[in-house]
Length: 467
Image (cartoon, rainbow, N blue to C red):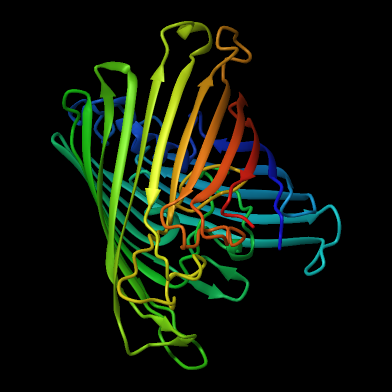
């Protein structure tokens, strides 16, 4: 029997951005700009008041060419590793902007991984390179087209939030905003498994992905085609409504037999976000239903000729309240979060969606995005209830040099939905709903526009679900 006393994870990362530009104009990072635009709804601005995509001034720079390097240097101390780990992610990029409207960018990624001690398997130091982004973004008034390899997020990111190849079309109307995308992820060769989280991350659970929280566990999509759609309403009485849809086609075949282990899900979901009475009391809620078809595995034998239905669901919610006391000095904010993903007592593992032992429907929630739920455990939103409470503040907002320092404290409780079912941590083998609790502390400091610091500490205390 394994007795797990505790689990601790320390995470420290410094991101440095070096930029050289043939232009007098400062241009934001493509992905940061995209995420900011997608999150404008969190600022509760009606769509009719958003600035149109077309240029509303004379073009100053017909051609803009810039490039640079982002360096994310990360050091992990994790009790599950039993060997401290350093990872450096270096991303050189080159970008060209035409008429301050159309943008084209290529970005590589080099990963340097070094263990403090030589591991039992694998190298102590290794480097891998890949092409992470190769995209064009074309703006035509209220119409926007993005094509190539780029970052795509659906809703708050649970269903889909990562890199893939394809095309995305957005339309901004005074009464709604629409976005559709057709995407493809695959293992292109032995050295580069694109999957969903970018090249080479199949064997690296500690990958640092821009715009994705450090306490998440990105999933592998393998070889898949995706179709996504989202529709967002303008704000009405401080609330914005949106609906989501996703379909995924499994394209993986066993190379030796040609057998397809198909898991072909579809998702329908939606959400609300806005404020309650006061702008300082904000909320967001999002829910999903998962349907589709898959093949069972019974008694250790894969039943490729049989099909079973998928019927699962999940939801997440969050409330934030900025206190009026010392608001201008430290911006104190209370945080409460709740999320749940359905489970299945017959499922043997969450590492693979298809070919599981099944009787009847597959009710385990499986997704292709990420959910932030704690640095030490990094649980997946399947067969799990997650309750988180905490607060954030800007302790030095009243100063100039340290005004962008943010501290976040969170306490988490984890409960199984079905006691007999598995969760993402394979060590939780007991038939008990009590998974445990955790504490998380995060420090974010935007030192300059080129230098950011992130420090995270997570401590997990296992419950009765662990032997």
